[in-house]
Image 1: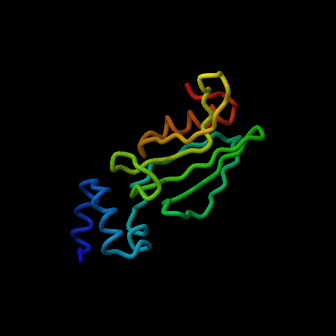
Image 2: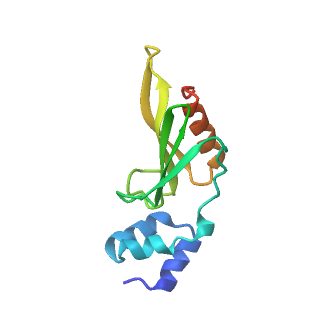
Length: 136
């Protein structure tokens, strides 16, 4: 079993994939989720007119929230350990829906992922979705 010092060393190296395996093989998931520090998660600066609802995480997400505005909504979760999808072994944000135009010029809803540090990209795409603008 991995010691807490070994765990902290992996965390300092930003070795999220290795930490995921530790979670699956050796740790109780709640203990590892509690080990993520506030400083590991970048600040999000929401527009004042947006309604942001924090929701309980489930399915392996670290956190979840919904943003509502103009009669539209976007759901976002943060996955630190690739419990819900693959993102090159690094923590990421995923938003749904993210509307795109398909080859026929019709709107398709899909998901979109962002590196954890790419809060500008996440917030820009949330704003565009709330304003009904499809992704480029």
